[in-house]
Length: 215
Image (tube, rainbow, N blue to C red; front, side):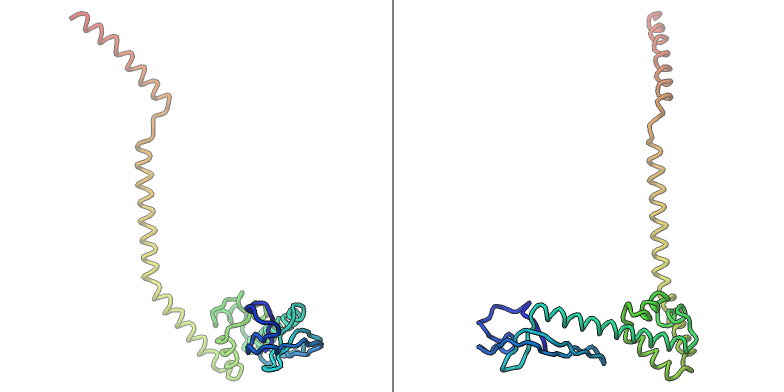
């Protein structure tokens, strides 16, 4: 196993972080290590760091650790691209469009496109299904039928939730309507209307005073 000193607790000089042996680390140069991802592997040469003479663990310095990590990233990308090409080959062999294949496995056309381009690693169930259909293309119709049945069952199971959601939306709309109506009832009068009403009140006051004087 290859590690670095990044997250290692304080140790005694030349103490191995892996096995704890003291005075066990020695500098190493021009070391070649093999990076492996699945079935893909690559040899990274001219690495430097320290190695334990007891457990034979190698600890890379910062620069070598970056180079080793870049090699691993390249292998991950290469594996995704290879898996994408395999999905594409099987899909075309079955006569499916990306949309049809996306509906079959549930990832949609965008999901199939990302998998085939190697942007995202396809899930293991998708790889397993396509591998099975590659060997037995006659099972495609059964797979499509099972997918349709599963989607129908999901739709039926979701009906109560849809009804509750619609009922909640209707109640919220009714509450908003009531709130709007009550708000409009308390709306103040237009200034012109208020002025005319005030004038009528003032016009009535002298007549009242005259009647009081006659009495």
